[in-house]
Image (cartoon, rainbow, N blue to C red; front, side):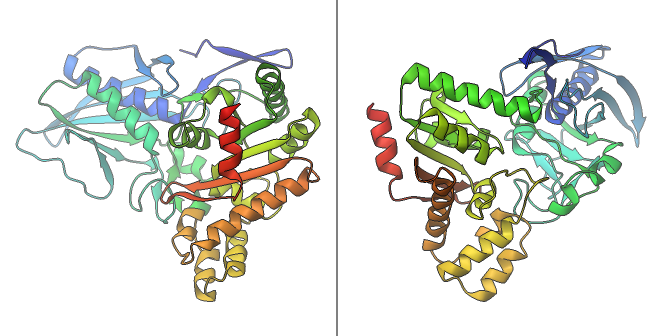
Length: 391
């Protein structure tokens, strides 16, 4: 069943879709419910991290026995809405096997286990395997990001009878070929696609419409609060950091995606005088190199920029080489030895942003990472945030 929710972009009605994470969660939950309830289902309902409930069509059901174990295998087809990507219409399978009472679920290094230790989640055919450091998932694990893992466990636990233990394996046969067309191999994710999604929902939007919608948000924020300061971040991780760590009102946070230069230009034209910029170092390190469209398809150089700034900050040449050869910025950060290096990078981001707006807008910056938390904040960051909160 298609998601019956829409947005309007430039007068065009566009339908929302759902992520590979939501699709996998639906497949896993349906397999569990069919196995234990012993009844056929045509649809399965899940709750997304965004708070929207999805009623997903079950595309196939297979029930059988292998090695004296009864199993149930179900599948759901991913729907990207009117903003399809390489994974649109891909079929995601989940196979359930019950674990006997006297068997323990153990962390083998290639699975995920829930807190109650009664669910093992595995990646099968077409689910990429992580082979390099620096990602949100450990080496050897299936490329299923933390939010989808939590969603899958949450949905399974709703229908798993008390005292029962299960192993669920996700297979995406089409993922083997589709994964080759993504950036996964470059990141060290081999053999398939990643299961992703921080909200569980795909928002349909062309790049032009997306940029225009952010400018509308900036205008509305200015009209509603009459502030001379705006708080921006590239994505949901930055917003979460701002809300949870800095206690910023989420209504006053603007997510700018990859359009750093475009948004800075518009912030200046709209009359804002101050910018609070908070973001993951993987995005903002590009800005330190003067890159103002941060999508990986358009620009990269993250490790080279990180390495160059590390050298300028006084890091040892042998560590700089490790940084440049690192798989991700998270891994690169692990080779930094000097506390001042991240401070140097934050200052460089500030300088590049202020130069972009011809020094007509003051910018203060905070960077963070998943592994290391807050990395650095520029000297005027606290003052700007404090003054903003007092107004």
